[in-house]
Image (tube, rainbow, N blue to C red; front, side, top):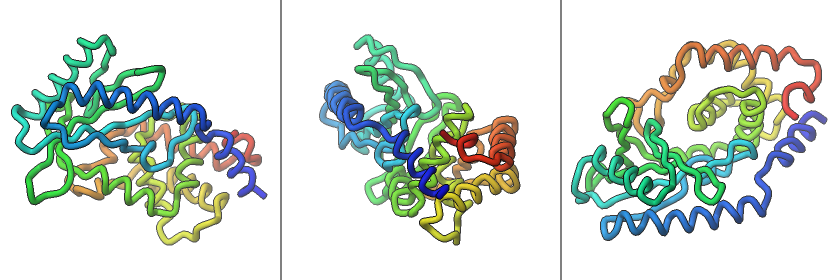
Length: 252
């Protein structure tokens, strides 16, 4: 019975078709603006993140776009990041600098733009510039998408995202998705209530100590995206949720 309730909440928080169409139109228009900036060195622009992995929920819908440039593009990744930021400012799009991305609102839709360049001809993946640390990292966002999409845990991920939003927790999307997948390793599928509670138990007991690494590059420590206090906030919220007698007090 609780499985049905959780499924109904996931359906309730699903992005409405009209909103998705609006977001798709805005993405296409914004991509045209970016294509003008990139010119002949543009390889492609693709959706990544929750939007591409089909794990988005209402209340936190954001479209992440990966702007992939040719390996021979002139300038450092820092130069390209700053150049794209200045270009978006010149278009009066009010961009904001984030760690690895540029955030903006276009046609009332939130976007995060990731500019990247291939690491080498013979290598797969992406190199991203972190404007906070002024360093670059290698990763593979397509591998992230495939891992999450093939995990068989999409409903559990959506449910945990709804819980995160309702409790106003800072819990970066990839970190959350990998945490759910790790917490449910070797757990049976199609048991939504049981698996949700298993994730709450993990967040309460093992989450604070466990290190989560980037599956595309183990040198990147995903769990470092949050500090100890932010992780404890998640653990404390999970402990409170686990003590609730009614599902209506956990997600709604």
